[in-house]
Length: 399
View 1 (tube, rainbow, N blue to C red):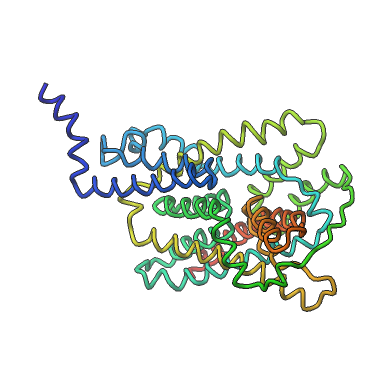
View 2 (view 1 turned 135 degrees about the horizontal axis):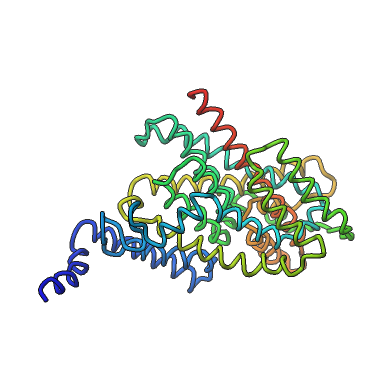
């Protein structure tokens, strides 16, 4: 009887220890994520599972300081099994991109192919933050040059607002210790696009620029072109940036399922069942990496701040690129469209249209914003492949 009571009260007494207090802090952070998901409707499919997964991972430890749902190498819990099967193997990001590819209609981009340049320009923040992080990490005490390179690459990718690509890069460089803050930063900023992007846009544009109207010359895109496009992009990416093929290939495969016209049932399954199932598993697994001892450190705050800087730089890069083009164009581009060149599809495009409508109720630039947003989805994947190739090259040369 006494042993049973001791077992029951051990969990309660745990929260009076230093480790238990850290767990309570994680519960508070989890509560914020769940609040944002439910009360504010900020990407609830992502933030709610992440928040609940973090609660599960910070319950009183059962063995070797780990909650039962996490477990150990010898006795893994179900969340550790999911991590090893879905994130460590890079399976979840691949499956997510198949689902995303099945959701995307590339017709607006094919109608206005010049929008691909905005998808490229909006990746500026990735490389700018990569360089900033390279210089900052040694100051903060990270002295291993190889770790600095690997960590800087993952932090930079956060700016693309592309969670799966961020996870893919971080896992590729075996950054398990930092997976919690990296993944939470990536997915949190994806959900906070409506809060983060508008101030940057307002700071860099004038009222006159935000009211610029753009005419969308819609014309039908043949099914043949829609079928050739994902195949051609996969081949081109495989030749130019081979490291991007797993993500580009899965995205384009999902799109080919959508556009081929003979796999409607599979296309719907990818858009709904596959997307929903993997999102649930991915979210709760990411949450399980938010273990207090690993998450409540200076590097978490640094990663969150640097990720925000990358996001701001990406948004600014797209806007400034559009303003630069307007110096030479007769028919001006609304600079806000450039901000949609990040990968947060379709959230960023919706934000741009909302701002445009607030400035001018009759201004409709959603199609241009969607075109840039779709281009940003491709641009972030290619940028991720370039970063992997660059860091692998530098690490191999001992730089």
